[in-house]
Amino acid sequence: MNNFALGKYVPYDTWVHRLDARVKIIAVIMLMVAVFFPLSTWSMTLLVQGTLLVLISVILACTKTPLHSILTSLRSLWVMVLFLLLIYILVPKAENTLGIAWSVNGWTVYWDSFAEAARIVVRLVMMIMLAMALTSSTKPLDLTYALQWYFTPLKVIRFPAEEFAMTISIALRFIPTLLEDALRVMRAQSSRGVDFAHGRLSKRIVGLTSLIVPLFVSSFIRSEELANAMECRCYDPRGKRTRYRKLRFHWGDLVAFLFAGAVMAGVIVLSALHVDLFALMGIVAL
Amino acid sequence: MPIKFENVSYVYSKGTPMEKQALSCVDLEILEGEFLALVGRTGCGKSTLVQHLNALLNPTQGTVYIDSFVNSADKKKRDKKTHPLRKNVGLVFQFPEYQLFEETVVKDVAFGPKNFGDDKETALAKAREALLRVGLDESFFERSPFELSGGEKRRVAIAGVLAMNPKYLVVDEPTAGLDPAGAKEMMDLFRNVHQSGTTVILVTHDMDLVLAYCSDVIVLDHGKVVKTCKPVDLFGDDVTQYSLQQPMLFDFAKSLGEKGYSFDAATLRDVSSLAKQIAQGRKK
Image 1 (cartoon, one colour):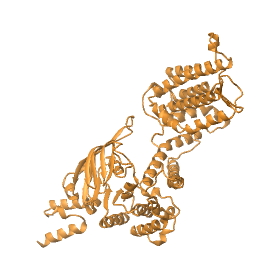
Image 2 (cartoon, chains in turn green, orange):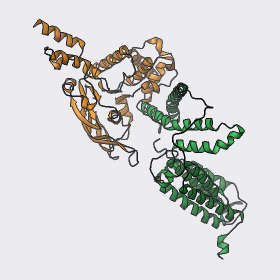
Image 3 (cartoon, helix red, strand yellow):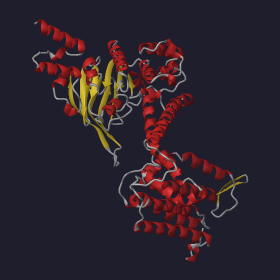
Image 4 (cartoon, chains in turn brown, purple):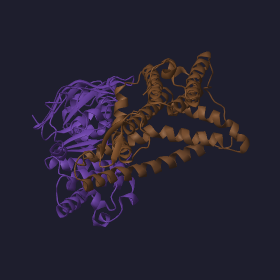
């Protein structure tokens, strides 16, 4: 529970932390686009994705997120990785560019399948790293304000941008509270002999109920209290709101924005024009 | 030695900007049969200390011995099987009423014993006994715990721990939010439990309770043990430095003393013992 790495803001003061939340969101989206763009050959994929991986690792290192926390969040992905590998090996692939891994009784598996599975895993890892860099360096409230800013033009078509932002910020605000509640109930039930990690499945299910039911009860109580408190402060969802802390755009933000944009544009160009740098340089591609 | 802390330190979120030292170099002993009060200002490390008794937390440094169980910072020396320990040390957290989850009161109370290996019948029998002990009669047994009042819910939760027949009972702020009569009943219950042979460790801010019920007191401040003594000895000193308050009784006796009455502070426990001394003083 405590190594809940994704989504936890860590209050350092790095240049990533100081970037405008709006820029960070759009930059993360652009880099994700770059990560997910397909490339023509495997060697190019290796080159581009490798560069991106290094780039994203550097960004994440700049936020001072300990790299082993990535491994922790990857641990839960294990099952998925195995499943992916299995699917790619069982389902025959038409293309053969990397050679045959094995061929038994007409069941032919190309190395492409492994490469494909690896590519998906690396993409996922990069996506998680990007999300981690964003959430660990941005206060949840700033994220919400940034989202609200992006949704403001939608007000023209009567999209409730402010209510939407309020809902998200309440949800975000209560993640640590509910986590704390969960930990508290977990501690209480463990001292009554519940073992959440080991034991028979049926026992563990009962153990889980002993955690979930109190959590439901307390979150309902909390939501009622919150609703009352908001009423008491005359909350009006349609009211116009001002803000103490305003998001500000600095020249550093522009640089970050342009850089992420350039990366995305570069990858798109490489992908769309089927550029093969290795062929251009006269190296025979895989 | 039943319970012994040896040079125990605990640090929350070590290695992050949120790092916080909750306990530093705590040495203490708790004997069998004590009714111990653990006091100190908010955030002084009481709850952290208490969680070491149940191996819910492992020390960052040092060792906690609970009977034969070793809870050490050194992973190799630490006992792995927490089950027997948790059966021995019953922990009642603050606001325990939020941990109820079963359909009926008696089932919820039987949850603990069942986890510790009792069969259904034995567990239910223990649950009924524990419920009667906390003052909830048969009419409550089959009701849903969610339709009870706050005080009744808390009793059910405490019964849930008592039903495990722990050798040590640790209660964190059991009287918080209860009305005065409810608080007194609650404390009488713990006195009862103590008299039947259980070692009770009470975490509280209420010095009147400490004076009236406890045999020993440990004062924590900024994660350190600053005083281990009998309650009367504690209140002889200036306790405001630990953000504590004199019990009302002591304040009263003190101002009476300034008016010329003399008291033997060592036997002051509650209103009746004070009244007795006043009456005796008059007879003289």
